[in-house]
Structures are given as structure tokens and as C-alpha cells.
Image 1 (tube, rainbow, N blue to C red):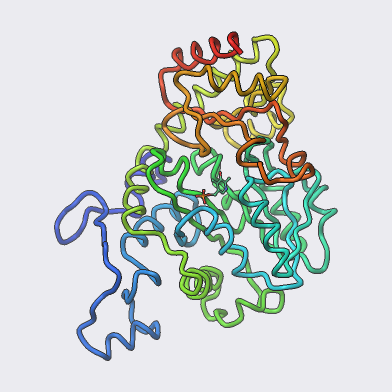
Image 2 (image 1 turned 45 degrees about the horizontal axis):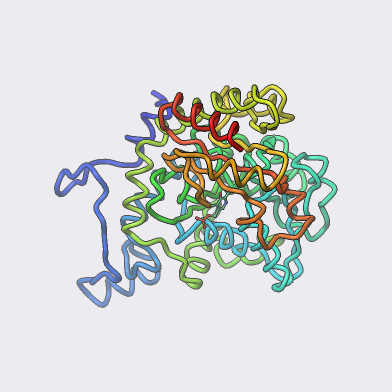
Length: 409
Ligand SMILES: *Cc1c(COP(=O)(O)O)cnc(C)c1O
């Protein structure tokens, strides 16, 4: 019997604790683990016996959280990190070396494009696709391309990537497709099921949902890694399809020390329980808010759920009739955008997304403060733009609050 999403979310890859019957994940708040004998310790260190030695390398609370996300994203395994940016950077550094190239969507989260600028100092060059389409990615391909990188729904451009088509192009050229699925969440789409090879989340956002911890996770699919094209994985070839995750754990997380705290994994796991409920409600609220604002004068609404969005058709097909929790408003000028934000009484002025509360921000003066003109243009960040991450408040209160703030702005 194949279970539906909300049931899988609560019951797959997790069982009450065998020893105590506890129904929530235990928090293994320890730095290290004692072994009975020197022989046992040696076996665990050399991988001949399962077990834990030190939390930077592995921790049972993290392992529980990772199994749950891997099941939801339909991957073969997952590895958690201290933040979404740690997940993004480690997932990439795991397979690229100086001289390699990345073909990437132009409309990336500000932190990711900032990281990509930093990577150039390590000799890793990113070519940006003019648009998030297979044609534009094809134009970025060279002999040196090691991976395709996109977001399911670009933040804050809200363009939608055709995962199946990008995966096909990537695979025809022997490279994996990496998808940051933070904004869409597995509730809207499971990219691996559509052909993606590595899925990344900032779990600080909708997966947690309560904004109480920063975290990240990388989920792997079954890409046929070959040691010629990806020499860094040669040492882990014995792990077969798991070689990517084996290196990510053994080299990246362990050597760079970007491990998630067990307590944050525990809190995020609790938030995860209600992902389906929150995404359904917030998506419905976002649609209502987008429609309501679109009916007003002197504001332009960007939401994949509106028929006027260039990505509406693709979103409808790929997300099975739901359109997510993010929208943006163009208000004509920076001054009006500021006035609008200041007049809102329910929405919080906050830099993150995916919270149970409705959040707004002016990206140009904040998250994209240090981005250059080209970067802002690629990401669709204009000076009059307000990004809205819709929460699960009562719909009519949100409509009233936004209506009032638009009038007063
Ligand atoms: C927030 C975010 C990140 C970075 O995650 P942190 O947990 O803040 O480090 C990466 N990608 C997207 C799409 C995000 O929204």
C-alpha cells in the first residue's frame, strides 16, 4: 500500500523508541560515544561496525531526521548540515575542484549567489543561464561543467524550473542536476522523482516552520557517479550509488565541521510533522492574497498561481494544482514599498521565509544589499519589490491587513 504524503510525513522512517516507547525522537545531546572495547572502537572507526564515535561525524538524532527527509524526498539517503548555506556549499564542494564549472539558474537566493562569487576565488566558475530554461542552460555547457544548479521556485523571482527537462539535458551531458527545493518543499514536488540527482533544503524555512533553528539538508538520488568525470568520488567508489553521500559525510561534513546541532534537528523534526498542514493552508492564503492584491490598482503581483504568471502552466503541471506560499508585490517605488511594509500590522518585517507567520521584506535594501546590478536583474530584484512569505493566519485578516496597507502606502 503506498501511503499519501501527510501519512508518510508522520509515519515513515520513524517509529516509537524501542527501549522506552517514546513517540518523539530522543535528543542525543552528546559530543562523543564510549565503546566497550578498543576493538569495537577500531571497528567503528574503520567502518567495519555501525556506530557513533563523535557528533561532528554522526549523531543518532541527526540520523533520524535525515531518514525522514530522505523518505519524503524519495532519495536514497540524506545528510544534515548546520545551515542551508552549509548544505549548499558542501553539496557542491563535494564534487568540484579548481578549474571546474557550474551551470546555474540566474535567479538564485542571495546567499547562494554570494557563495558562488566566493567560489571563484577557489577557481570554480559559475555560468549563469539567462533564464531557468533548458535552452539557456544548454548555452552554459562546456567541457568543464560538473553540475547544473537551480531552485525549484526562484527566490524572489518566483520563476519555476522544469525539473524533468533540466534533468534530461543534464543527464544527456553526463552531469547531475542539483535542485534547491527550499521554497517549494517536498509537499509541492519531489524533484528526485522527476529526475533530479541532489536536492538541497534550508530546513530553517518551511520544513521547520516555526523559525526556531537554522539547519540544512542534502538528499541524494541515484546518479551514476563515474570516477573519471568526478575524480573526488574515486576513493568512495566501493559505495556505488551511495558514493556521493559517503564522501559528503566522510570528507565534507567531517572535515569542514558543518554539523547540525542535535537539539536543532529535534526541533526541526517536530516542525516537520505539520509540514503538509502548514503548506496547504499557507498556499491557500497566498492564492487568496495574490488574487486580492491583483485586483487593486498601482500594484503588480507576481505569483505562479495567477494565470498571468509566465510560469503558471508549468507550476500547475509540476506542483499538482498548488502554487506555494511566496509572492512578490511591485509597488512603483522604494518609498512606497517601505511605506507599505511599515503600515502592515500582522505581517512581520523579517529576512527569512517559510514561517507559520506571514513575513515581508524589501529584498533590494537587505538580502541583495551587496549584490551588483546584474545579479539583482537576474534575480528579478527591483527597488520597488516587496517579498511576501505567506503564513497560516486567518485568511480574511491577511486580506484586510494587506488591503489597508496598500491604501495607506
Ligand atoms: C534561506 C535559504 C538558503 C540558505 O539557508 P540558511 O538556512 O539560511 O543558511 C538557501 N536557499 C534558499 C532558497 C533559501 O531560502
